[in-house]
Image 1 (cartoon, rainbow, N blue to C red):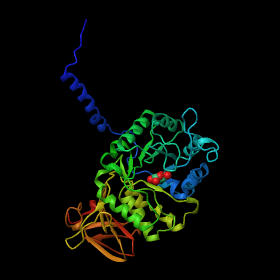
Image 2 (cartoon, rainbow, N blue to C red; image 1 turned 30 degrees about the vertical axis):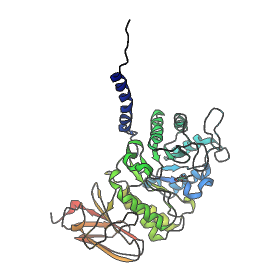
Image 3 (cartoon, helix red, strand yellow; image 1 turned 180 degrees about the vertical axis):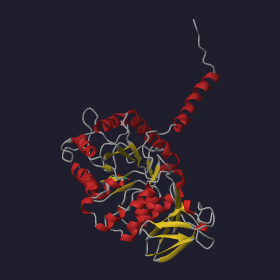
Image 4 (spheres, protein in one colour; image 1 turned 120 degrees about the vertical axis):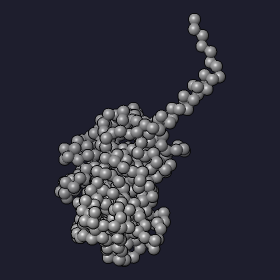
Length: 403
Ligand code: GLA
């Protein structure tokens, strides 16, 4: 007969092995192969909140992606936000699409959207209820992930309302593991508003993470979110990006200069670009902004490095957290991007390439301004900007004629 004696050292060793389980878990990384560049798509929330969470509005957006040429530019995801289900799960514990909003169910719409060459996304929540009071996934993660896979969902935005107290990372990891278990590649978009320093662990859990509270249709909100993103730019990269929230372009409240800057900054910061307007009614000037191919190529640059602020010389002010800063730069796979922003009022701004980190000292370069398409060559760039407007220069580093 074998007798086992539980000595104190053995019990401590067992206790330790339990303690060690959590660092091992923290090292696990999401590996779904998705989101190597920021997602491009549309979401219903900023369009009409709960009232836009319908099959009709998803299909209208998908049709607009085709008719407006957005699909050809890489816009792919048609995402439905909060309020798509009934208020209670069924007796077997499954979430039920609201039949008045989804007369043929969700799968039929996902199938139709797939047949158009696009992808379909849904919204859920890591608490007991979503922010609008619909069923949350807490305790139902595996079942809900399997349901999403069965319906053909490609993108899952996962929110943070009605949650137990404590660090949110565990709840978001539970859903990550459930999605992996569902064996369908589903882009995982964390939405916990920058809580618990999500940018420090988001990349191990999701393909993007909201880093701020909800965007509002006003310049102050756009400027504040972008300035916060500058502080955490280095923590994002292919497969995991800071999410600056859905676009407000086309919704009124921002003038054309502000809409241009909103779009350009989201491209520079490598945020997902998730359009948030009724595309069947989008004004021509707003459409032109979201169709800027050159800025989209900054967003989709394979290097996936987010731009951030830089101080060009000793006479410039230092960046203040929460306040938009006029000088931005970032590396591209084939050059360097430099942006100048009129953060308060109309202004003439210029910068010498010698003062741009990443351009390796003085030199003359070819450049292209991506908002207006002007080109040039020299040792500096300048822009005469109306209030809240932006100029974005792509500097071709392969063309250094001083080198
Ligand atoms: C939260 C999110 C928003 C939106 C709403 C829906 O506020 O941050 O983006 O999804 O919930 O209720």
